[in-house]
Length: 232
Image 1 (cartoon, one colour):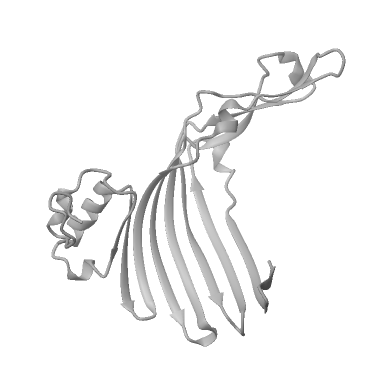
Image 2 (tube, rainbow, N blue to C red):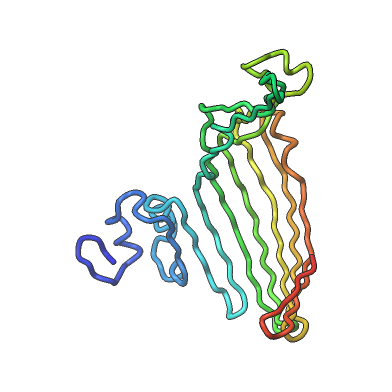
């Protein structure tokens, strides 16, 4: 709906400029780019009015392509900023452990994500293949590092203390994510997921903290009566 007139019709080539910055949480284009005069301008406007913008093109009834950008902030790290874990000796009340030290100056991580995707559907086995190429840039990535207890530095001679801190440089993740889903028989579903990831960061403390790949194979079976099982 256009904000100044209340009309429900929208000309993407012309009317997106009427919306203010960050007017929406997410913007999605479907069956639009192939009919527009300036698709490059439309994408720029989408990124202006929403922190998450996705474009979808259905090339055929069983094939679609997508492109998207999203900006998001991870959940506020409450434990990492306020968590103060201590252990005291029974009876004497002497501090004997301080495994976690709070960090009230911790910043909330921000994630900028770009992706290109393909979704294909196939009649044999009622299968689908979803492939996603992605690039994610994480600013203020949070990780745990050893520190000295402010209450009693001598504790570190017995047990280490730890504190969550922000990385000094951005962490960039690039990779490909594949998901294959099939239904070989009644109420059965096979799901194969595989991800390859390459990470880059100038901070050596974060470069090794991301797994280079992940994979899983699941079988879900429905048994009727509201019962089902899952094996992964």
